[in-house]
Amino acid sequence: MTKDAAIQSFFESFDLPAYPATSVPTSGNEIPAFPYITYTAPTDSSMERMIVSASVWYRSESWTALNAKVSEISQYVDAGHVIACDGGGIIIRKGTPFAQPMGDDSDNMVKRKILNFEFLYATTY
Image 1: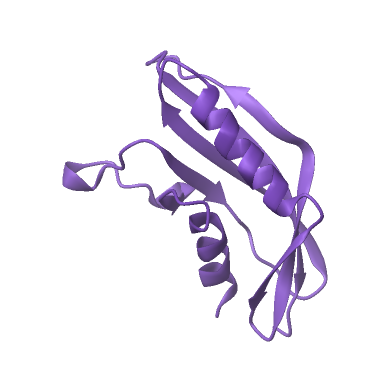
Image 2: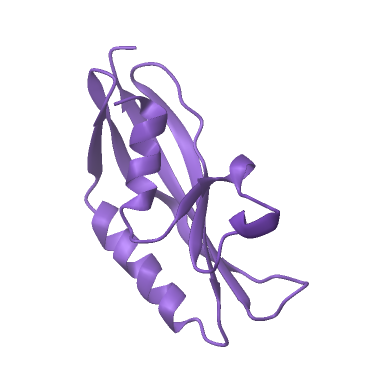
Protein backbone atom coordinates (compact mmCIF):
# COMPACT_ATOMS: atom_id res chain seq x y z
CA MET A 1 0.00 0.00 0.00
CA THR A 2 1.26 3.51 -0.76
CA LYS A 3 1.72 6.14 1.94
CA ASP A 4 -1.27 8.12 0.65
CA ALA A 5 -3.51 5.03 0.58
CA ALA A 6 -2.40 4.03 4.09
CA ILE A 7 -3.14 7.51 5.45
CA GLN A 8 -6.58 7.52 3.81
CA SER A 9 -7.28 4.08 5.28
CA PHE A 10 -6.17 5.25 8.74
CA PHE A 11 -8.57 8.21 8.76
CA GLU A 12 -11.42 6.11 7.32
CA SER A 13 -10.95 3.55 10.11
CA PHE A 14 -12.97 5.74 12.48
CA ASP A 15 -16.27 4.96 10.71
CA LEU A 16 -16.58 8.41 9.16
CA PRO A 17 -15.96 9.48 5.57
CA ALA A 18 -12.48 11.01 5.28
CA TYR A 19 -11.21 13.46 2.69
CA PRO A 20 -7.88 15.11 2.00
CA ALA A 21 -8.53 18.75 2.88
CA THR A 22 -7.84 19.80 -0.70
CA SER A 23 -10.29 17.26 -2.16
CA VAL A 24 -13.53 17.73 -0.24
CA PRO A 25 -16.41 17.71 -2.74
CA THR A 26 -18.07 21.14 -2.84
CA SER A 27 -20.86 20.83 -5.39
CA GLY A 28 -23.76 18.70 -6.52
CA ASN A 29 -24.69 15.42 -4.89
CA GLU A 30 -21.10 14.86 -3.77
CA ILE A 31 -21.09 17.40 -0.92
CA PRO A 32 -20.36 15.34 2.21
CA ALA A 33 -22.98 14.98 4.89
CA PHE A 34 -21.94 15.53 8.48
CA PRO A 35 -20.08 13.99 10.25
CA TYR A 36 -16.82 13.58 8.37
CA ILE A 37 -13.04 14.01 8.67
CA THR A 38 -10.70 16.18 6.63
CA TYR A 39 -6.94 15.92 6.86
CA THR A 40 -3.66 17.29 5.57
CA ALA A 41 -0.89 14.73 5.47
CA PRO A 42 2.39 15.67 3.86
CA THR A 43 4.59 12.68 3.12
CA ASP A 44 8.34 12.34 3.21
CA SER A 45 11.11 9.80 2.99
CA SER A 46 12.26 7.33 5.59
CA MET A 47 12.74 8.43 9.20
CA GLU A 48 11.29 11.89 8.72
CA ARG A 49 8.78 13.30 11.23
CA MET A 50 5.86 15.26 9.88
CA ILE A 51 3.11 17.17 11.64
CA VAL A 52 -0.29 16.08 10.36
CA SER A 53 -3.59 17.74 11.17
CA ALA A 54 -7.12 16.50 10.81
CA SER A 55 -10.49 18.08 11.48
CA VAL A 56 -13.48 16.15 12.73
CA TRP A 57 -16.69 17.86 11.62
CA TYR A 58 -20.17 17.41 13.12
CA ARG A 59 -23.35 19.45 12.79
CA SER A 60 -25.26 19.37 16.06
CA GLU A 61 -26.46 21.51 18.93
CA SER A 62 -24.19 19.53 21.24
CA TRP A 63 -20.50 18.66 21.37
CA THR A 64 -21.25 15.22 22.87
CA ALA A 65 -20.96 13.04 19.74
CA LEU A 66 -17.93 14.95 18.46
CA ASN A 67 -16.16 14.67 21.81
CA ALA A 68 -16.88 10.92 21.91
CA LYS A 69 -15.37 10.45 18.42
CA VAL A 70 -12.28 12.48 19.36
CA SER A 71 -11.89 10.38 22.52
CA GLU A 72 -12.10 7.21 20.38
CA ILE A 73 -9.36 8.51 18.07
CA SER A 74 -7.24 9.60 21.03
CA GLN A 75 -7.44 6.16 22.65
CA TYR A 76 -6.59 4.49 19.33
CA VAL A 77 -3.30 6.36 18.94
CA ASP A 78 -2.55 6.90 22.63
CA ALA A 79 0.48 4.61 22.85
CA GLY A 80 1.36 5.05 19.18
CA HIS A 81 -0.10 3.25 16.20
CA VAL A 82 1.65 1.80 13.14
CA ILE A 83 0.19 1.53 9.65
CA ALA A 84 2.01 -0.54 7.04
CA CYS A 85 2.98 0.98 3.69
CA ASP A 86 5.72 1.27 1.08
CA GLY A 87 7.95 -1.47 2.47
CA GLY A 88 7.72 -0.25 6.05
CA GLY A 89 5.22 1.81 7.97
CA ILE A 90 4.13 5.07 9.49
CA ILE A 91 4.27 5.45 13.25
CA ILE A 92 1.43 7.70 14.40
CA ARG A 93 1.47 9.52 17.72
CA LYS A 94 -0.60 12.31 19.21
CA GLY A 95 0.71 15.81 18.67
CA THR A 96 0.49 18.73 21.07
CA PRO A 97 -2.07 20.00 21.59
CA PHE A 98 -3.93 16.92 20.45
CA ALA A 99 -7.41 18.42 20.09
CA GLN A 100 -8.61 21.99 19.76
CA PRO A 101 -12.29 22.98 19.45
CA MET A 102 -13.36 25.31 16.66
CA GLY A 103 -16.66 26.73 15.55
CA ASP A 104 -17.97 27.97 12.24
CA ASP A 105 -18.84 31.66 11.88
CA SER A 106 -21.44 30.92 9.22
CA ASP A 107 -23.32 28.15 11.11
CA ASN A 108 -23.31 27.84 14.90
CA MET A 109 -24.51 24.23 14.61
CA VAL A 110 -21.22 23.19 12.97
CA LYS A 111 -18.79 21.78 15.51
CA ARG A 112 -15.17 21.02 14.64
CA LYS A 113 -12.13 19.76 16.47
CA ILE A 114 -8.69 20.08 14.97
CA LEU A 115 -6.48 17.11 15.83
CA ASN A 116 -2.69 17.15 15.68
CA PHE A 117 -0.60 14.07 15.00
CA GLU A 118 3.06 13.31 14.57
CA PHE A 119 3.78 10.85 11.74
CA LEU A 120 7.17 9.18 11.59
CA TYR A 121 7.78 7.71 8.16
CA ALA A 122 9.74 4.47 8.47
CA THR A 123 9.50 3.39 4.85
CA THR A 124 11.98 2.11 2.28
CA TYR A 125 11.05 4.85 -0.23
